[in-house]
Image (cartoon, rainbow, N blue to C red; front, side, top):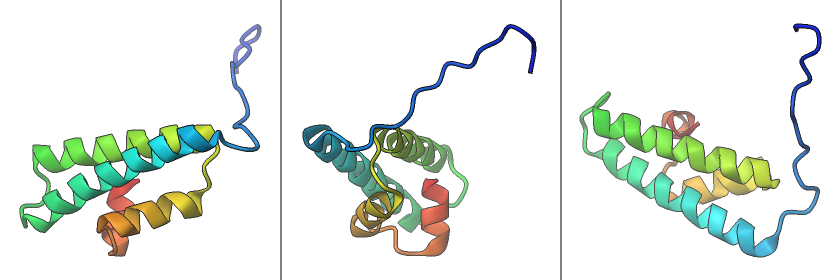
Length: 92
């Protein structure tokens, strides 16, 4: 690390805002459903799949930053139709 550089970080909230958590988990589930639909189409490694994966990862990061536990995020993805380990890995 260079001298004089101070990273700007902030801890995740201890208790996530309930209303914000619902919105974020809905976003995670919607992205999970989109990714599941693309993966069911049968054509791997398409641009559409990449876009769905990136959207899902962005939604997961936002939920994580709000302090939503990983187990809750996984349950939202499983309910969205990503039940295979490879599907969950693709989601991020």
